[in-house]
Image (tube, rainbow, N blue to C red; front, side):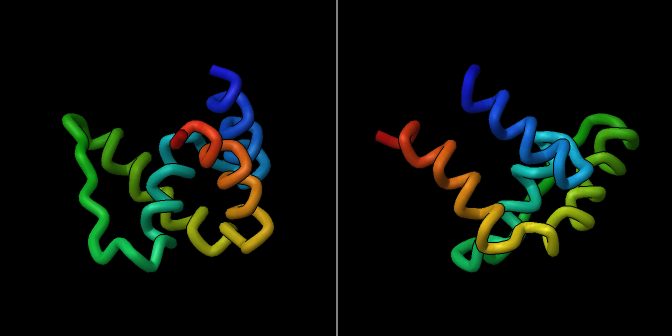
Length: 75
């Protein structure tokens, strides 16, 4: 829960949601060739597509902040 709070703060600073931040992170990841979105409602699809607005905001500094939050969880 603490990690989600920290990611929420980053997403808020960028003007998006945590879900949009996650999609933008995947979209920015050079190891990922395709981002597959899942949505059961049109509003969810529109919300997911807004992640494209966050992608260019993922600077090396922002990515480092995301890594600082998420990498400890991978162990």
